[in-house]
Figure 1 (cartoon, helix red, strand yellow):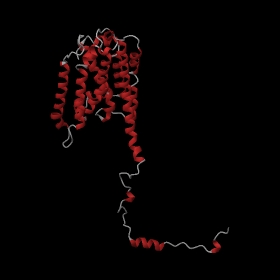
Figure 2 (cartoon, helix red, strand yellow):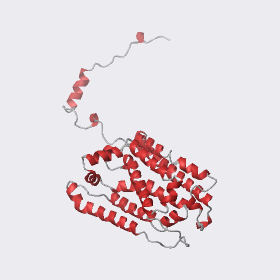
Figure 3 (cartoon, helix red, strand yellow):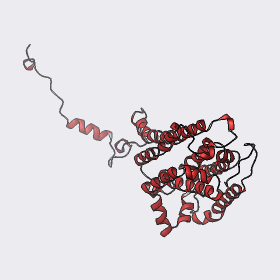
Length: 316
């Protein structure tokens, strides 16, 4: 993720060794936790990791690798801010949920423990704290001075990317985190995600409606990829931020709404019987079985109704 100099050929392959090392470390650490720590932390008979968690982890590593290496990294850092925006959206909206889906509850509890580290982690995962920190990072990473400087200073660029991933992961923790006690209710999640979609509209609108290049670094590039002007590039970046940010979160909200309320609606409007039979309908439920003799005796004790006489009929 270190800053690269401007190349005459934007599509020239450039290796990102630090990303290769990071992905290899994460894969190795995950395998170690599952193979060595998992059998000791998970009760016998229960799965250490599910197929869904394994698939989520593989997907997250592929996404991290693609978003942080050539060509997305080089084009986004040196030539097109719109590609840089795709990179940031991936690292903040797509990668963190996959990482959380890939993390079993036992693994996170092993990492955070149950003492001071857990209390600090739980505090950072509170919706208000996590949401405010995430949106602060979103605003800071779009300040022109920060963007222009980070493209020329490698460690700062790497640090900003790391900060985006960490704060985004904490932002997603109350929604899809593996610890049940830190998750919000369905209604709270929907309101929370809607609020998370509001603040990014500010820099998105600023980029989309600016008449001049906002970031000097991208406006001064002598080579224009795909023939895009600086104004078109930043307008596309604003559109990507709005669509990938706002519409993506709104799509999740709609999905959660129907998932929460459609199940009960289908059951209420179904012609099928419920899964459990009423107790009174279960054969043999009565303490004393009903016999033919008991029924006959009950009929004998009942007085048959008498037919009314002709004088008792009402006259018309």
